[in-house]
Amino acid sequence: MPPKEPIPVLQHDPAQIGNKKRPTVEAEPVLKIGDKIITFSLKNVDGKNYNISNAKKKKAYCIIFTCNHCPFSVKYEDRIIALHKKYGSKVEFVAINPNDPSIVEEDSYENMIIRAKEKNFKFPYLFDEGQFIMKAYGARKTPHIFLFDKDYKLAYMGGIDDNSDDPESVEQPYLANAIDALLKGQKPDVEITKAIGCSVKVKKKS
Image 1 (spheres, rainbow, N blue to C red):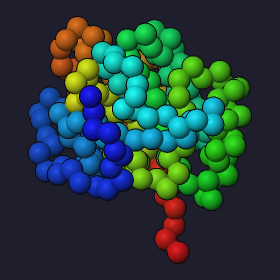
Image 2 (tube, helix red, strand yellow):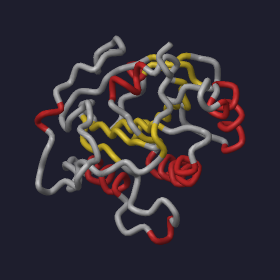
Image 3 (spheres, helix red, strand yellow):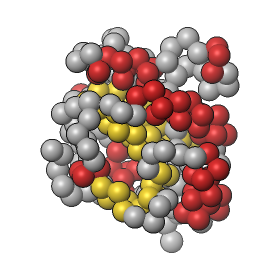
Image 4 (cartoon, one colour):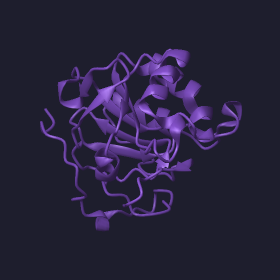
């Protein structure tokens, strides 16, 4: 099982990131491939706290930092729903809104509830109040994917695919390919890609 307590600090050394087979990322992430999942307990849109440590044992765990307002997040909503429909029985999908609602009101918890109902999300949609989990993971964009294997080790991070504008023109479905590899007991061919999306809206220091 993963560790029981959330870790609201930046404590992972990113210096080891790098592999000729991996696409270039725009900045060094906090987590690196092979790191254990950082656990958390966050408020879901159903009003209850969701704890990743208590999730049913599955073949993989997909953490998606996303939000309501970002055009990229909106474009990917239906693709995320489709991925959950296809893989949800074997993969735990969890969406997390990392944005500070004082900067973008559309990303408030109340508006998250509305959005989840409108899109009929069948997976948890959590509010990262305080932005501790976003910082611990090193999520910089919405959407930003962190996919862990059955042993809770990071196997893939970055984008969902290579075409945010048109799902019919996707040539590299990075996340789906990574999930397929994990379900076969293999490592993804591509472990890191650039997350394409809006920057996370971080609360300004007073």
